Image (tube, rainbow, N blue to C red):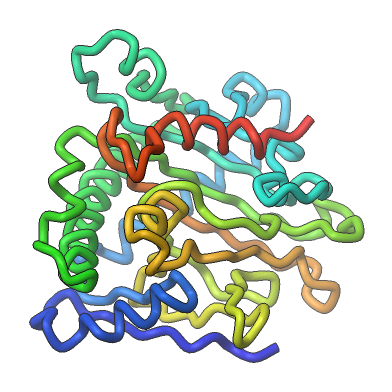
Length: 302
């Protein structure tokens, strides 16, 4: 399997010379690598260490925090099947997740009840909350920085997208991909995350390299391994962003391979931040958060 070619954008540099590469990448793969973000790798390592302690707890303990897709808590084995979003019947994804989301209320009771509920923090990992809250603060600033860059790459004003992120929603998943000693032998067509495109605006991913890792799809190259740079975040756009550009850019199709047969004990963990626009934002006639809710419901397994 070959490795996909993606440009690396450095946020410390003048964006002008990088805009053509951004545009080309989002037309073909829907993915970029982003350096110069200023997020301490030690923070990311600390989140992984704390979350790993939680994931290794007995299932009976984790069940106290069990939620459905789109909730705030623990998504256990079999909770999600991302291939459903493409209309493909697949076995459930081979992962567990801790999920968090925006919680600062807007004052609109109906909106707050759906999109700005309090997060649930596992008592068994008390150090996780301050780490995640700091990470979420940094991710919002980084995501707005990226969106300003994307506005310019589209040939618009820098705030073309960020004028719609005054009080945005977001989701944050800590995805744990255990080895085969926990998952068992993958079923035919079963992945750690099945093939899909993300649903929303922009996703900022901190990932680990592995044989059972991320793959991207392009028309020219088919499925290819995603390039990995430990200093860079992997950034991709979702369906709403693709629609926002009138189809100029494509929502990046991707999947995460199952635990490999030649490295059955491989364990990976990803930090996945899904940044969205303000509730009520309408994109080419589509109410953004109605679409998001429908897609979250679509990938719920069981």
